[in-house]
Length: 108
Image (cartoon, rainbow, N blue to C red; front, top):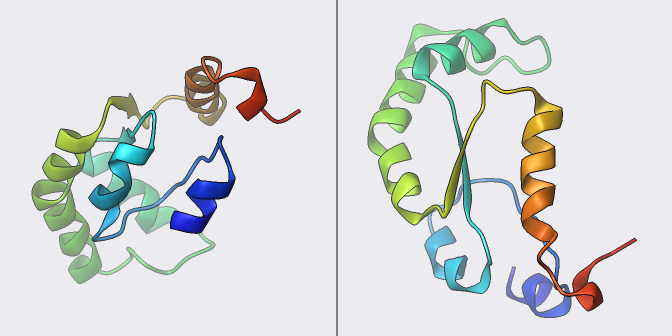
């Protein structure tokens, strides 16, 4: 991650890892994409490309993450987006954050 951030000025990273806070000061924005837990449970239990989330145990795990981890993520975020919005709208919101980047950091 350090090498990536050192060599690219316009990096968008998606994911959650235990040490992510170490890198926050190297980002212009930290965006939390959130949705109500019931929306998350419905989405993971009905998807067809990944079996995770179909069991009650896994759904309980998701509920615990939302209750315990999401508040920590929210504290570190500079912006929170509602994951119930259309994907295109969410992508546009994230892209708009980059419009403030200097021209030298933008890619065509």
